[in-house]
Each structure stands twice: as C-alpha cells, then as structure tokens.
Length: 512
Image 1: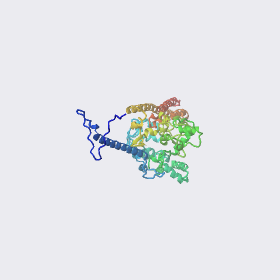
Image 2 (image 1 turned 45 degrees about the horizontal axis):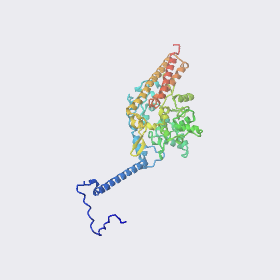
Image 3 (image 1 turned 60 degrees about the horizontal axis):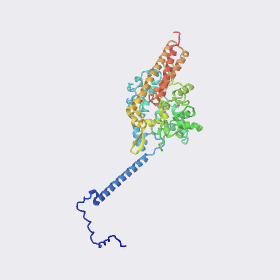
Image 4 (image 1 turned 120 degrees about the vertical axis):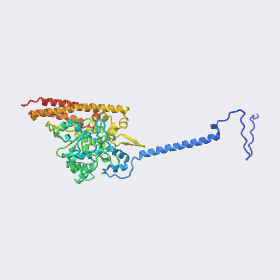
C-alpha cells in the first residue's frame, strides 16, 4: 500500500539563504512582547544573573556570620594565670570588657541603687548617700557597731574597692585584711603569700588556702597594698579557656560544708548528685557543678552572709546547717559567735552582711534553674556573637533581655509586679524595724530600772533573734524579690520575736 504522507522537500543547497517564515494570516493577533524569543532570552539571562548574585551574597553572609560566631576571641595578647588588670583581658575579649566598664554607671531603681558621687574622706553624709539618714531607726538598731556610723547604698562593681577605702567603717575602726576577700581581685595575692610561706606552685589549692590564712590576719591597711583592682575577670574565669571557675577560698570551704550536711538544696542538683553517689572526697564546684550552676556560684562567692573567726580572722560562710536565716542562726548559736554587744540593750548581736545567694536559693527562680547571670547578666547579640552582658545591674534596668525572654508580659506590668513584691516586703520590714527599736528601748528602760543581766537574759535572746531576721532581709539587696515568701516568713518571725522580747522586758519587776 502506497505511503499517503506528503513528500518531504529537499534541504536547501549549502550556503543558500533560509526561506522566510510563513506570513501570519491576515487579521491574526500579534505575539506579546514578553513571548518573543528576542526579548525572552535576554530577560532569562538577566534574571539568572541576578538570582545567582543574590544566592552568592546570601552564602557569603551566612559564611561570614558563621565565621563570626566561631571567632569569639581575638588573640591579641597572652594572658598569664595571674593577670588581674581587666584591660588586658579586654584586648582578647573586647565585647565583654566594653560592658564590664559600664559598671561605673549608677542608676537608681525604686528599691535600690545610689546616685551619690564617689565618696571622699571627710565628706558629710547626706540623705542621697546614707541609709542612716533615710532610715534613722538603723542608728538605734546598729548602736555600738560601725554600721551605726556609716552605712551607704550599694553601688556597682567598679566601686567595691574604692568605696571600701573611704567608708568610715574602715577609716575609723580597725579592720583585718579579711575585708578584701570580696572587695578586690585578690586571689593572686593569696597565691603570692602562700608561695612566700613555702607552698610550691605545684600545690595550687594548698597554696591558695595558706595565703588566704595569712592575708586575713593582716591589718587591712597593710593588706590593701597587695591589690589594685576591684572584682575582675580573673575572679570568675580561667584566662586560657574563659571557663567559669570559683576562686574564693571561703566559698570553696563553705560550699563543701553545705554539701556535707543534710539541708535540702534542690536548686543545686550537682550537690544532691554528689550526695547520692556516696559523698566521695570533697564537693568541688569547679569539678562537680554544671555550667548553669556555675553562672550562680561565681556570684555566690561574694554575695553571701559571712563572718570573721575571732582569732584567725578567717572569712567563714556559716552554711553547715543550710542556707536559711534559721539554719545560719543555729550555727552561730552552736559556736557562740557574736559580732558586737549592743550599746543600749547590752545584747550580744549578729550582723547580716549581704545574703543574696542564700535568699535566692529559697526562691522560685533558683528552683526553676534560673541563674544569677540569666537576670543580672543576660545574653546580648553583637552581630552573630551571643555574649553575656557584663554590665551587672538590676534586671529592672534591662527588662527586655532580663525578664521578657521568659515572661511574656508588657514591661510596665513586669515592673509593677516586682514593685508590689518589694513594696510589701518594705512594709513588713518597717514593722520589724519598729519592733526591734521598741524591744531595744524596753530592755534599756528595764536596765535603767535596775534589772539584772539574769533577768534580761530572755528578752535579750529574743532581741538577738528578732534583729538577726530583720537585718537578714534589710541587708539583702533584692528587697525580698529573690524569695518573697521566704522574706515574708523571716520578717513575720522577726516581728513576733521582737514583741515577745519587748513584753518580757516591760514586765520585769525591779526594786525601782
């Protein structure tokens, strides 16, 4: 059967011009411009070039950011183990150093801070600087103790050494070198004194402890010549790895005693794990604690309650029975420790220092795994790098990064909630201080009527217990926020004990 397909025309001769395309039928619509090959092909080429350039730019940006996130250290200088000057550390860690320098900033919050200029010798105490002027009851409460002469608002870390140099508590009263334990970058001085005492460098822990013993007993003026900087990078970081570390001898001993005890510490899981695993050796936070725990423990080196042992002046953290005010009081009672004898009441007294670590340990943030650094040194991004903000300050001055990463409420609502807690704590503290002043006056009045020490013993015991609790909250810088329920419990006990003591003293019968 013959093929019905039309014959294929022969190809044109080589070199002959191509035949013209067939003409469009009359009246047919013209092809749109964007469909014409001579227009489409250049557009495709341009679009491809632009897309390729965009992808390459994106890849370059991603690579740059990844490189930035890896290169967090600028190795400009070597940092020997004893490097104290933070400016030297700042050459390798400029981001952290820039924020560290801002601890000179002084901005007052409603319940803390101080706008007073740096102190000068002989400067009169004004209401803007002195707690004693703001709250005259403190002069009565601390009567006979250096705090009744000079007691100022806390300022930033930049001032912790210079303010100590000029406070009347050190210029008018003899103080030991132990005072520098928390006010200076002092661990190199401890090692130096330990070395001079014959402890070689290959026994660093023993050398540190020996130097600690030597410096604590020195007169403060003599020991002051061993240090030049307030708290510095070396106090919390290893200079080679920047690993967080605990350096303060008193804390190393204190946390070891706490671990050996039976007090519950749910906010320190590494301690509880150490206990469950058989309590082998001595608990060492530098070896046993998690990194998140260390972000609180390095702060707890100094923001704590402590006392100086009578003969050795050794700084001691009284954590043998636990971290609550009651636990610490039991330790002081067992060791018969007294800070001073009250000038008016004749009561052997206790003075709380600044027990932020102890109070935080009783609060919801600690139990939830929130560290001190999470709120007071929150992370900040600089380019692709995330670092801790070393401008240590109140979270109320940095609500966005300090609070709102967890609490999804407006800033003003968060501030209002905090101020309610602190305001209620202040109201309770006012009542406790009023009660303490009343029991002091009741005991003094009983003395004037001829009451004997034996007759006053019970009232003085109640006065000591009441004022210890009120002072525990007064001296703790969060104004109750770190553990609001604990602060309320302690202040409630203070009011009750003080009123009992007042009644005891008022009902003493004398011959007058």
